[in-house]
Amino acid sequence: MPNAEKVAAVADIAEKFSQASAALITEYRGLTVKQVTDLRRTLGNEASYAIVKNTLTKRAAQDAGVGLDESLLVGPTAIAFVTGDPVVAAKGLRDFARANPLLVIKGGVLDGKTLSAAEVARIADLESREVMLARLAGAMQALPSRAAALFQAPLSQMARLAKALEEKQAAGAPGAATADQPDPETPAEPAE
Image (cartoon, rainbow, N blue to C red):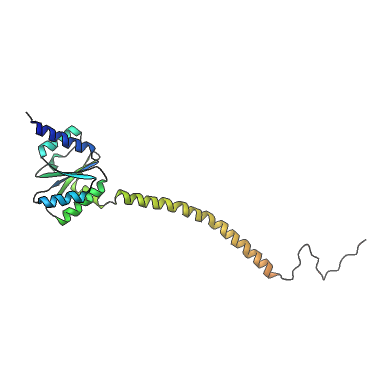
């Protein structure tokens, strides 16, 4: 019969799984308490890093309806529960693992799909949500200005052409008669 502590721990982990957009599973064997604390700071406010017991995590994942590959829950396990942008958390874990090779990223879960360690690495290589939104906004802002320039180009070309024709006509025939003025060399017709 399970004791109250274990039931509470399973409920807590299940709640974290339910609230998280992603859960990134790591092995922390060999890391010091200071290194784990530094890792928690690295992940920021949008992710919590919890050291968990494997059997309790299996039950919690079942309770939360998360399909978790049980092979990820072997050895000392810690999970980064991500409530914000999964890319930022994956980058934080990857960068920390590069500086501290004892941290091993085993895989994770993103939107109910199990991820391998390689897939977590690919997510870490993506641009963050803010950068992607900024690029999208820049591209969307550039489209109307490009369209306006394209639409104005024929009008400005037509205006330049008309001005050039006007200047050519004015410069080409300085003494030319216009339709309103009679030519001085042509004799005027006698009036009847």
